Image (tube, rainbow over all chains, first blue to last red; front, side, top):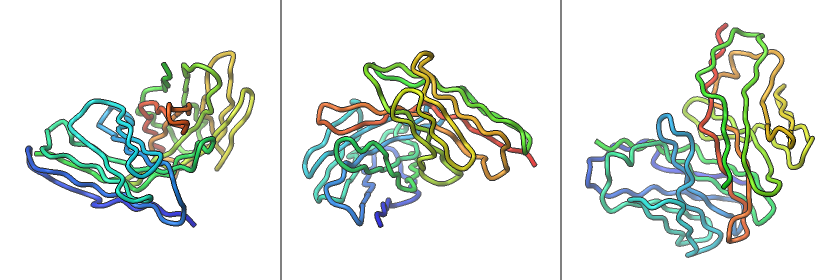
Length: 113
Length: 115
């Protein structure tokens, strides 16, 4: 069966520090991968998605970047965090075109102080 | 563009009450529609979905019918339980430029059930 892992689950970082959140999927090949952010009172916002290694699409201009170094690994990064980067970050995966169900990870809560 | 508007929360109900959470959408073409649920401290889980007009999705006593004429996908349950307390997200899917499907979510509705 397929599983998705995110870590760390909780992170507290000072403004200006770097960020790396990791997501891995097991039990499937060539998944579509997604990073969402859930900010307080603002619902879910799609940040990045990827249909293959090295293929990243950014949805909104922001202080974050994403990379996909391996088929089942998706990394969310920042060189310098802002206060507004605080939120709950969710990784998700789905199978190829036409399969529209997303499976989400447990999330990573980031607090920037 | 594609968007989802759902009922603002929070919603507080007594156990065994009837639940409706409204969701309407704006989309080009014929999207698929979803309800996801997020229990405290967890990620989102698919609750139910409908892929075409007049389809009814159902799961765990929850139901939602895809109404093209009113562009709605309201979530209902006849008798809620304390364990239904969660945040509920309505969503629609559409095809990206890369050919994969992307989901657009509503802002979520927090539901609290009181014993």
